[in-house]
Image (cartoon, rainbow, N blue to C red; front, side, top):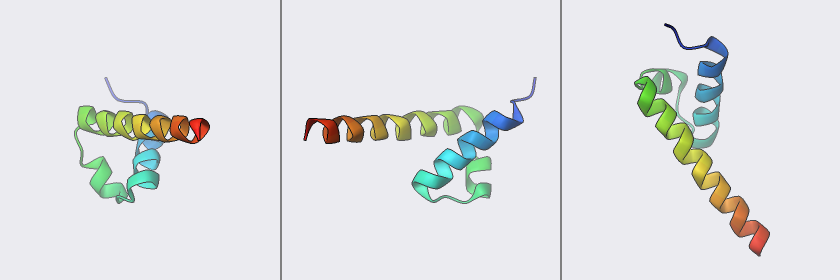
Length: 55
């Protein structure tokens, strides 16, 4: 089974935008590692948004 192309590009764009990594660097990540990076960046963004709301 292949990973949906649209979802793959969403993950790549998200990590590239936030971490400034190249397309090739992100694409070279194993799928579970890339997903974990997306989750971690999302977690950081949620924490920052919550902190801004509290301020």
